[in-house]
Image (tube, rainbow, N blue to C red; front, side, top):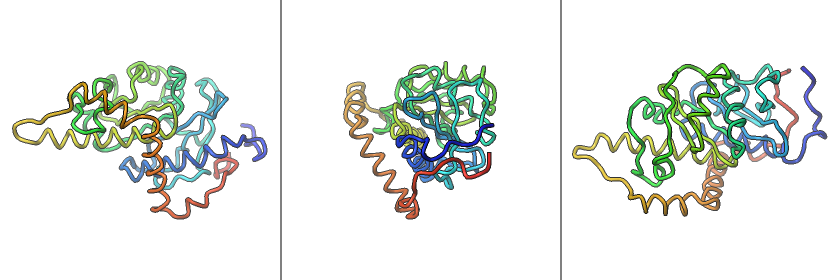
Length: 257
């Protein structure tokens, strides 16, 4: 495999994106997405057919800008030796969804449990309004997604939705930006948790009307709102790990290629 690019060869956008993806990973850890070193967050490198993805040996909670590898959206391209086993999932989604610029796949507990049921997600909370009626469930396998045909079938199940449940496995969340994908991953986990709690209430429960769902999507999840949620998440990461404020753009993954 060729040596990593020099710092000078990286665009300012890529150098900044490394820091942002690492912040997203730490935020996902705070939000309950840890499962040892499993799960991934990735983001397209602007103006290219490549993306950054968390390395296989690194968990969300410990991810730094150095713990990211570059991958091609072309599944036939040789992968970095530290690329995660489920790299093909991200490649399949990016191939199928040109509108998607970031992908989160995790085994967040409530998302996983909700996916193991036959429940349809309802707008019990603001969070649920984002996904009501557009949260497909992939049921063909619960195994780790290691080969392209399976990855492509997940991307097909996802369709044009913002997320999909993977039965007995976890979830896939996408966004037009890294901030959108990260925020939506948090929203999905909270929506699943709150509905699972509501399901235990004797006598049933209510959810938002269709008009309210539309209004919430227009206001609560407008780009400006999502940006404010991302800013909160980034601030939460900085408060939990003060050293992240000193992260500088780096050249490549710290482990040798």
